[in-house]
Every structure is written in C-alpha cells, then in structure tokens.
Image 1 (cartoon, helix red, strand yellow):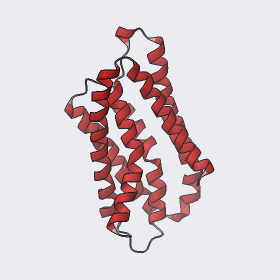
Image 2 (cartoon, helix red, strand yellow; image 1 turned 180 degrees about the horizontal axis):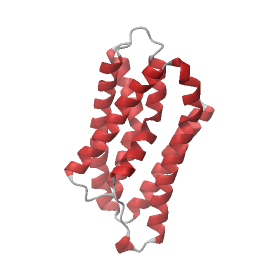
Image 3 (cartoon, one colour; image 1 turned 135 degrees about the vertical axis):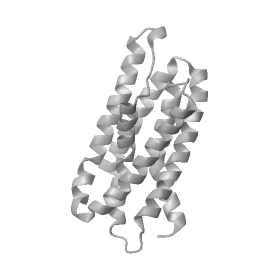
Length: 187
C-alpha cells in the first residue's frame, strides 16, 4: 500500500470526525482554543488507535466487529443527537447550552472511529503494511480536519444562534444513520 492510498484512507476515515467537529463548533460557539485542540486530539487519537487495535485483533475477530460496529455508531450518535434536539426544543432560550464534556468527546470519539477498527482488521491481511506509521498518518489527518471543522463550526454557529443546537442534533443523528445504512446495505 502506497503513501497516497494511506492518505486517502485517512481522509475517508476522518470525514465523520470532521462532520461531528463542525457540529460541536455549531453548538459551542464560545469554545476556547484549548478545548478545540482537545477535541482534535481526542478524535485524532481514536482514529489512530482504532486501526492499530484492529490490526492486532486481526482476521480472527473481523466477523464479530463488522456485525456490530454500525449499531454502536448508530446508538451513540443517535443518543447524543437526540439529546441535543430534546434539550434545544424543551429548554428556554437563555438556558439552552451544549456542554462539550470529556464524556461527550469520548463517546463521539468512539462513535466516529468504529470504521477505523474494521479498516485495521483489513490491514492485517496486507503483507506490506506498517501499522504504526499508517496509524500516525491517519491520526494526523483526523487531527487537522477536526481542528478545521470545529473552527468553521464555531464561526457558523455564531451566525445561527439558538438554531445551531437543532442543526447539530440533526447532523449527528444523520451521521449515525449514514454509517448504519452504509454497513447494512453497501458492505
């Protein structure tokens, strides 16, 4: 596998993290740079660790992972997005806040990197793959795209105001459904 192929895989794997980063920026328009960096580090770390874990799990567990990975993503993102929608629609305007907590980032990191675990399993079948440099490249790409996404989302979220949390919830639910549909109908 050549460098360009790994870069393209990294970009593909990071798209869900990029979209969730935009959503977080939409809903948390007052994020400090340190929180934006933590978000990007979290998403990048999960995107790097999951293919590494998948690689070492190997083909022996592939069928078990691919059977449930899309369900995990659907449930986690559906829950987070649904909670955002519920909070946005039931709370008064001045109380409507979306807190980007460590627990929430952890759940989002797992949900957006489940596909990377399956990719890591497939890497185990390739004779010439070096998993550590490959995982570091995927991690770096995801870090950069997540940082761009949350920065962009913050700027757009300031313009959307209170509607940003509704948009964000719908986006997260949509990403969960997209992952589910891809795995059920197109794998």
